[in-house]
Length: 408
Image (cartoon, rainbow, N blue to C red; front, side, top):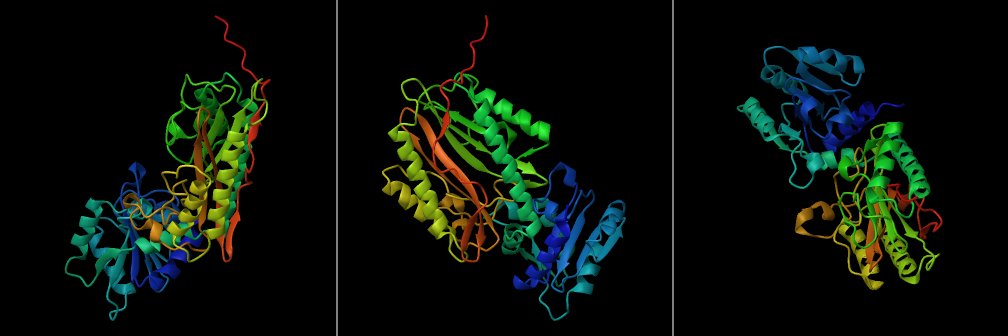
């Protein structure tokens, strides 16, 4: 498997100058207990003592770490220099900065702080205060590196994209198995447990909190959104059966939604209200895909989908039509969403080539449940390419598939 860290560090090296920084600094400690979200992109493993991972305007990559953490970084070959310390990091940190930032430069040190993007906000308040103390009186000053982090995380390398494709393929395989397992009479929780078992057997991780991954909905009484599968709600004829599933394979995620109609004796095929909902959702995703191209702000893509679904006679959805996917399902950066306060500046950010997004929305079909699709796309120079095999029609759960009643 090709390494991720080396290619992402090379990508970072090109971004430092482009974002008018003299150095990009990731400053962490005790990473096993929770760490900066960017760390897995640039380092395999963890760090214990205060550690400064720096990429300079020149492209040079230097790590200042505790002496017991130094050997693995040196052995990786990713770093031009690894500087170990024993008693404290302040002095070697300043020495490295002085050696690698030209005197005529302003000394702008980009740090991982953001008010818009959780994945770019990895520097804790305590570590920020320590860094300010260490830099106090020097010519260096910390500045936000949000734009660099968003570009680094969002612009997928070929290896990252290959891993995402594998995660998508495995997710689609799981959906096929869900269709074979799900039956009239099974509960949402039984479907959830089945999928979790298959994920565990294959060593797949969760793309979001495992309590709600997958999200399983059957019928009008199910929790819509970030709910948990019910141990009492059962698949029944006439229901819309909906699953939102994401997995992590080799460090990269998927996020897809699929829908079935639960057939019965009186309705052996999907009725008009369900097929109509399906067609409206497909049209809205088509509208978003047509609007998605480099340079377009995310809110314009969302507006295209929102106008389409409302124009089809349905209520507008109460979320963004798309988010970026990478290491996790919600991978930060700009979103394809409305200009709502809760999204901050993320809907204003222009789409970039190489980013991977979901296109997702759904509608409520009265007395039947939630009907929604979610696809994944990568942004190309002229538009977007679907990475997932699209669902454009209603899948059917056969009326003959029933769970035998439990024996008392």
